[in-house]
Length: 401
Image (tube, rainbow, N blue to C red; front, top):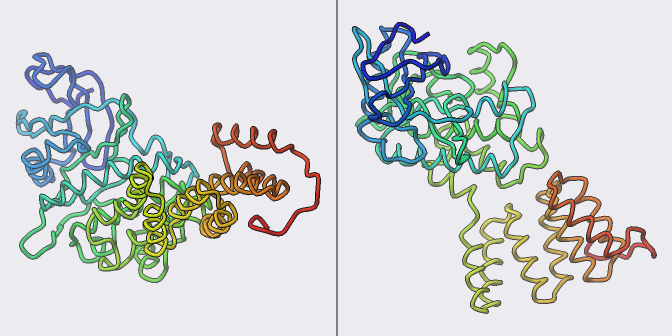
């Protein structure tokens, strides 16, 4: 049922879902003003309707041009109620992909980062307009079925940053596990609230659980744990998470706002491929091998905990017929990310080039044990067949030892 809401020019189709503050319905647009369908959000509580709609009015005016934010189309008065007309996006909520927190459902690293970048760029655009979403969580992120793009829902909770540099909230509505302590305790915050919430969401996408998660946890217990304990490091739950991703997550969800990333762009940069990788690629494209190597070695000095730089340098050294040096670099990368199958695979290839068949086969076995990717497994199988799957001499000491 449409909750008793009838809108001229629109026809109720079905109920899409019920959240903490509103129910969303699907209506067909009989006059095709906005397209074939619109999503209509109706707040449950008339007393809280005004602040929610006020937030949506601000969003309508300032955020309708941001691709990764679901468009707010119009706000209509129906009888004594206000309803919100939004872009209808066909696809699952991120929550539906993950299941309930603590169930162990995870996304691949590539998929999790893909969605995180899109949400982060939407929040970055909002923050440039002095707006904070305040309730980023999997229930407020929808994945468009046709494009596999993540879009942010429910900017009705959004707050404007005031002249004091923060927003204040007089009522609840925050989802505790995704909300930093300054909001839960002091009822105020700034744009770093969204950085915290997105960091928690990425944590959940990669681990299947949440920092401090306990079933039926009280708010008091959560706040006490946040004050006294550090979150469990994500790699303690999912060892395949790269170190650079773990470091970015832990910084984003720091208890003290001043210890987090200070803007969304910094969070994005910590997760994106370092710019030196493209610079090195461009140098190689014009034959400047030495410049490419210089750039990559500078990257290792700047980001010594990011295995992507080590992998790129090792690939360059292999290209320059320096497999022994490449093997040493790959072993350094494996110390950072011991569960990365690509690193073990590249080391296996390097060791084969050095003639260290036994060590190569051991490296390929490790790559296989850490991989679920069909293409990677096929490559490993082909390399094993090429090398011969059985060792024919004792293992030598060297880069793979």
